[in-house]
Image 1 (cartoon, rainbow, N blue to C red):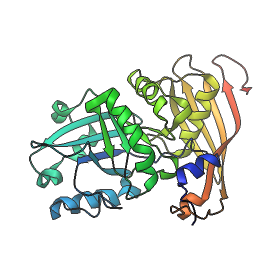
Image 2 (cartoon, helix red, strand yellow):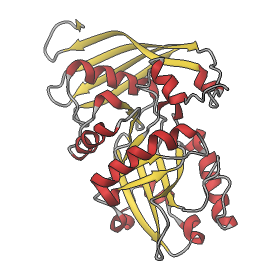
Image 3 (tube, rainbow, N blue to C red):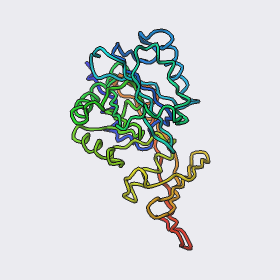
Image 4 (cartoon, rainbow, N blue to C red):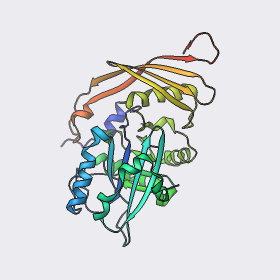
Length: 314
């Protein structure tokens, strides 16, 4: 009998990199749903048909809208209003709106376009408290339940009402995955002893860089460049740098940041590399995307100091 192998364990043993590989996302719709989470939970569920169709269309519009439709839960739901959240995760604005719905029939009435634009009419729904999502979606990938549940329990112990289990959010092979909203920060391969430090960093407006997969406000090459920049400068404050420009030439990327601390310009050049990985007998998660090692490698980091006559290459 072949021993069962979890893809997240295999990925970690192979040291498959994850920095810079968070999905780009502009808007999140989080819906409290305690029914069965099937493999494609937001597509196949027992929601009333208009609500199910609306949520499915939102999920399927990711390529054009960068929209994330996600189920959340804490356990058996008590009576009372349904909880629903909308998070906006754009470079210029990260906000979280909290709604209470009388029924799922109200879902299609959520004013997503107005929320994306930051319409003042909905300021009363703004939430001052962050949300922490931990993927525990075992029917999508067993790794999420096996490695996600201990992280969820620890996060819930520390932050209680701010923490939710969530359905699939990508990166099963990097489980356990934890997302901080509205900052839009993905953390991967999270271990129980690291949870407190991650939550505290988020409260302080900082990154816990070691386990940060990326910030969804940026496309992946920019996420990777930001990781290298923060690794080299030691600045973990979310507001430490502002993105000025990103340019792609085939597999090569040039990303330019400016430091908000001292005005220094940082130009980083990266190359995207992909390498096939061998399938392993016993892993039930051998999907094509998990048999590919993708990473962005830093080729050059140029520093332009204000008033200086030339760049410094580090």
